[in-house]
Image (cartoon, rainbow, N blue to C red):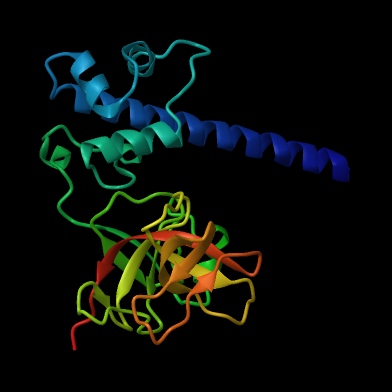
Length: 239
C-alpha cells in the first residue's frame, strides 16, 4: 500500500515538473520572438547575443526532440541585451517598452564579512535570498554574485587614491578567476574569521594579498588563506 502511494505521488510530481519545464520554455520562446521583431534579420540578433544562427532557428521553432532554451542561454541573452535578470522567464506584452536597456539596477544579497567566505553555498541569484538585505549593482550578475561591507580600513591608501574605508560596499564575483592587480576578497579558512579586501600580487613567485594601508599586514595565500571572490564594484558610504 505504501509503495503504491509513493509511486502515485512520484508520477504526479514528475508530471508537474514536466509541466513547469514546458511553461518556462514556451515563455522564453515567446520572449525570443518578441526580441527578434526589433531586428531586420535574425543573424543580426544572433551576432549580438553570441549564439549560432542555426541554434537560434531551433529556439524559434522547436521540433520534437530539440533542446529547449536553458538557464544559461536565457541569462546570456539578458546580459548581452542589458535586460533585467530574469526578463526571459517572465511573460511580457508587445508594446516594446520593456525591451529598453536596463535602467533600474539589479540587486544581490548583502552578506556579512563572516558569511562572505561561504557565498557559493549561501547565494543563488536564480532563487533570491529573502532573509538577506539586497544591494543594488550596475553590473550584470551571475549565480553567486554578492555584496559585502568592508570591515576594516586596510584599503585606505596613504595617498588618498584609491581609498576604500570601512563601511564601503563592494560587489563580488566568486566565480571569476583572480589575476594579479585585482581587488580580491580573501578569508582565513576558519569560521571565526571575517573576509577582507586586499590587492592580489605576486612577490618572489608567491601569491600574496596586500593592503593599501601599510598599517595592515600582507598575507600570503595558502591552504589557510584563500580567495573567495573578485571585487568588481564599490559603493562608498557617505559620512
